[in-house]
Image 1 (cartoon, rainbow over the protein chains, first blue to last red):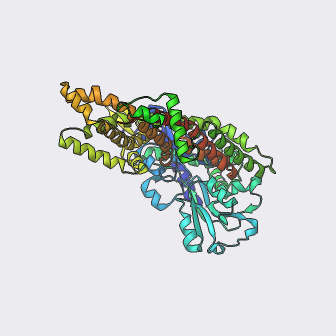
Image 2: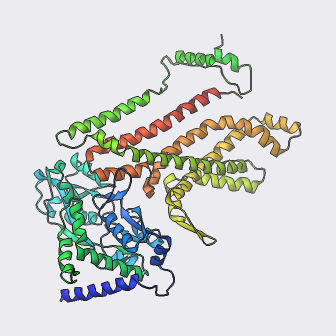
Image 3: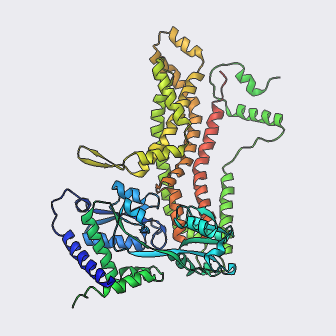
Length: 280
Length: 295
């Protein structure tokens, strides 16, 4: 049943994407018209979240999400402008019209859907886990009771870790500060997105550490556009479907040296099975 | 017997410039009174800070030496152009903020000594309000109250974050400059006003031609102090997401994701600010010594 729904959804999106890029429907200038008019697409991305969006020594923002943004700009045939955003200002920027599109590791949650238009389908997914010294021997989340745990300020799972599992959260503004504190032993574990932690664990420096617990709260990440920009939303949904069909995101994960997440692999399998391969 | 400095000061009420010999003598006599040499920073003290940063870097390097990764200094070197560029942005913000703040503050300061009670009261309230508000709060207000673009006659004028941050920082500067101007004008002895009046100068002429030129000398040191403070406060803009040196450092650190780089990188930022602000502090100190006057 879910497959049928998906298939129908896929067709609808594909049609919508074609329609969206076709003639202007005569409505007042929407964001897509504005983008075409000024010749640049402004996308909000993270600049402090390796490998999804980070700085290179030239000062440019690179990573998986900037690459996805570049795909969108190429499809529209416009230039790309990246605006670095953080969790606390990304939805506001979108609402103000400062950015046209947001690809900023944002977890798709119902309360956020009220503020911005989070597109279907989601493009990525991550859950919550901890990184700790192997010698600490945590087996389940309840073991964190009374233990100091580093966290990033503003992450929604801090509260859960604190209230349900009784951990003492030590808040930091950036991941490098939190990781530093973990190494110095100011906290016994660091609670964060499992995709980020997994990519750290591949580095030699973290060979003494592991991700001992079961990932919880696995939640998808969504692209977002402003509410009311239906035409652009349909076009972007089409882009996400295309990425899943092509396996673009899995490809990017490999390119940036992280293990493809089960979510992106599953989406690729599901979607590529329902859209006929181009012939020739 | 009178001390050398006293001899000179005892004879005149006018602002005078001390010759270097007199300055040295004054200093020597003070040191004799205190019994210890007076502590003054020299340019080479900056080298000490540089050494601390290098040591921290070396220590971090030793920590990570077991692994086959590029050394801390190599990592730092790679990012230096970007960080310096960010720092130049800080300086640009400080210049602009100081310019705007000084222009507005001078007007506000002169209004504070106006003869019209409403003008005086109004400017006093504005000055006190902005002088006693935390800089970061003013910054937030400017960030979130101002729009990101204006529409003027069909043209879209962008109003980027850093301009908003500059305006936010120039508000407290304005209030402080206002107080500096008011204080300087009031510190000019009333004899100057009276003499000008007896020579039939109007109030405006007195202010522009006699009082303010005398004020500039004594306003310069506090004004430069304020500038150094403003420069160091520009990192506050990182809180509201302006891509200045602090924001860039945080981003660079997460791009490197090597916790041992934390101390050397922030140390480097410290060094940048020190190298810029310290000469200003020295110069201010020199100016203060030159304009030590008894009126």
